Amino acid sequence: MKSNNRNYRASFILDNRGKEETADQIVEGVKKIIVDVKGEVTGVENIGRKDFVRVIDKKFTGAHYVHINFSGPPEAPAQLREKLRLNGSVYRTFIQSA
Image 1 (cartoon, rainbow, N blue to C red):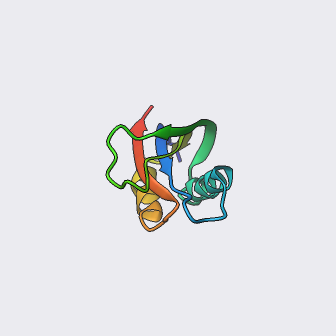
Image 2 (cartoon, rainbow, N blue to C red):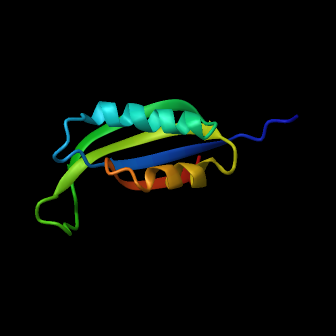
């Protein structure tokens, strides 16, 4: 059977307010979820903490940004979004084809 994996670049804004988890621990959890949806992580770029341009919540003015490159089947981005939707440590997710 021919493999039809595609390359993706996922950008995450992490929210670890009030949690003992560090940004690196949250990234490790996201990488495990990518493997669960039959993806393979090819690279991680930790951008670090940045302030938001538009602040919606005055108590949450900035967060950690992370880019993760991975390859996976065409349905992997939708499955990843669904698994992260209820994860309180991932504030926003943006996935694009690379």
